[in-house]
Amino acid sequence: MSELDQPDAAAVEAFLRGLQADICTALESLEPEARFGEDHWQRDEGGGGNTRVLEGGQALERAGVALSVIQGRRLPPAASARNPELAGRGFRAMGVSVVVHPRNPYAPTSHMNVRFLVAEAPDAEPIWWFGGGFDLTPIYGFEDDCRHWHATAQALCAPFGDQVYPTYKAACDAYFYLPHRQEPRGIGGLFFDDLNDWGFERSFAFQQAVGRGYVDALMPILQRRCDMPYGERERDFQLYRRGRYVEFNLVHDRGTLFGLQSGGRTESILMSMPPATGWRYRYEPEPGSPEAALTERFLLPRDWL
Image (cartoon, rainbow, N blue to C red; front, side, top):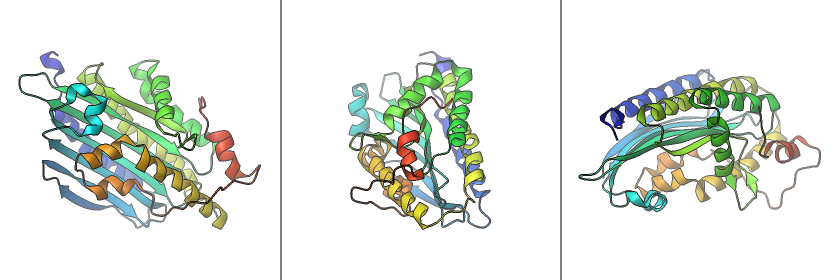
């Protein structure tokens, strides 16, 4: 690794702190009164973060935008099992995680995460990578929302190569999948991990594009959907579908597992959960209904462009 390509953790941290503030400002623009509260926390082994949560809003039932900047003497098992060369190294890990649960069932849940990890050992080159992405989980599907979401993802990837969007879209479809349900969690987006083969500067530039692109992808959808009229039927279906979100986060999500195994703050890790949810036994939507269309037309791997 050349001196010009050394990882700059301070630059990444500065970007992440600004990104957290920018996302909160954008989401608050949907609300006449509700605002984010801020909760600072410290980690015994090193580092900490701040978790910003907006609850009970007119548009957003819950939105969480969490920043963490932590360090430790050894990587947790979830990380070193995937990358055995990291075993025994100290680490610094930082990231911003966002989950938005709108109140209106016609407005989709969304998730974004961008993260950076550097693992260090005496007398050895640091090992580092970026990861992240964003994905959309509609309750009721709208073709124009899905096309806009993926068009925004494709546009931000385009400067980095023609194959970046299709590669990371496919990775997102594969990752956000519930094998026990044989069902995707949503309509996907982008997912990348262990990104370092572009070099630090280019990899960091891509992370910045993803973090900023999330707002560009999400806000027009929320502005279209948050004021649509809905009733008890739509709310009941929303609660049922949110159960799938909980199942994925608790059973399959690597970020949740890493956070809990690394001694992260449980309240911040689990702020991604919806504020209300539900399960039904052997529920089947009425054939031909908008509820049935979700799984029949939208929760399928598709070329949305």
